[in-house]
Length: 516
Image (tube, helix red, strand yellow):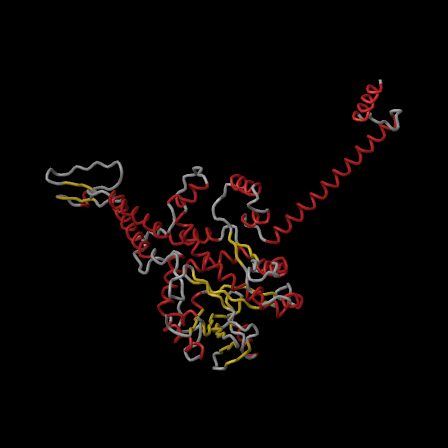
């Protein structure tokens, strides 16, 4: 989305407009790339027009490709886990449960699943996803860290160098987006109220521009004024998540990077085939040796023409099979390049085992692993920003965090769910075998199942409580049976029955025999 060089998105003589114009020239290639990706995703594939009676054929596979990859990545969401620290023998991950619960609460306040889907969609379309963590004080809830996605075309990062390792380190990040003007005199506000369109006031739009450094933030205004404020976090609160990392590059690769040329070709050839079908569906009539005015149009008409005259329709002498095969070749090439198997687009609804499904979706699984690498690192950085904000606004969290070293506070692990259905019966049999052979433990098996640490603790506590209740119940039944046995023995008339000792009796009999 390019900056419009006139109102309503800024005046040409404003300071912010001049600044953004310079940045647009510097990032022109990236901005054009974003614009093309968004245009194709929304279905605006044609840059030219035709006669109103001649329609374009648009088969928008770009939207389908991006949505499939975004859905495949975000299946079952993700879980935040506090990993163990092998270098510290005294560290116990259970002592950091307060941080895991706080992070889960913040993500849930920001609608975790919806936010993750939007992040995957933004990264899939533009190749880059920029996320900012700020403090939301306007909510009906208590102030909490707000996680918001900034459109990629509104973010302009600067680096310590143009290439190489220096490009990977941020120097500052400039954010600019249009918003309604909030400044103005009372007379101007009255003018806003006087200008109405369908009952709604017409307000001027301006660009909000802010530049973040590690130690400060600068706000720029149209009149040239600059407002400098300290950055209490100590780091730039913007996280960049590339869709597919490119070695040596800062920006990522879009899901549509190599799809647009094939999409254009497919639309062009589909339109040509449609024109041919329409042309021969209403064919042109060729009349030779007679005036057209002498022929009566309409159904059920009989024409009498001279012997030397002829009337015929323009026929399709060629065949469309080659064109249709070419269209199918382009269509298959699009999904092969996108890494999407054919059965995802045209499912056969046939049952497959877990191994067969994994082999069929192998290309998508490999691409998903690349995305998870970027998203895991990005979400880990977002969690670090959330912890920094919570230490400023939540005194209880700050007191608990003060008892732990920084390397434990800013170190979290992200576990994504499985994208394909699993054969749980086979996995449970394998887990049972490992437990029986002493090769694993219940906790480790539950971690392999993707359960978070709080869930594991809750399940183990419930199992221990059930075992205690079972033991108490067995003790109750045992006491009841013992009491019944004692009562029966007393009521039998032999209060102290004693069984004879066979060894003692046998010894006495032997002694009596010797005496005799």
